Length: 150
Figure (tube, rainbow, N blue to C red):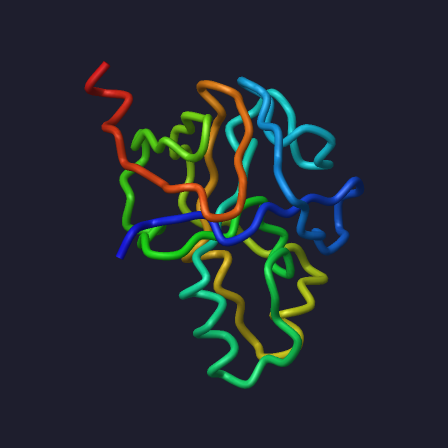
């Protein structure tokens, strides 16, 4: 199965569920244009696999869709959380470097409150934008190496 983008999601304010958009413009060393979480830091873009979202659906969480976990890019066909830090990904026109696996949920995490657990702390990842450009749903995701190969 080809690894691909399922959705691009954005929120203009932190703490809000992200909404899916038709395309995203990712700015080098910044993140998704107009997203509240973008900035010059190591967690510019968040990614989560549809497979992880499906696990939560199987646990009975209702109403899950892309963006509910505040991920910028929802993926399919790649086990994100097994990628080593420093992995370089070609996603659409962009090149992104994996900088962090997982994160702590904030104290008011809606998913955690509903079912007592959330997948983002273990299965979501963060990247830094090395080369900017557009990303569209159905764009292929390729592992192109590691920062250590350069």
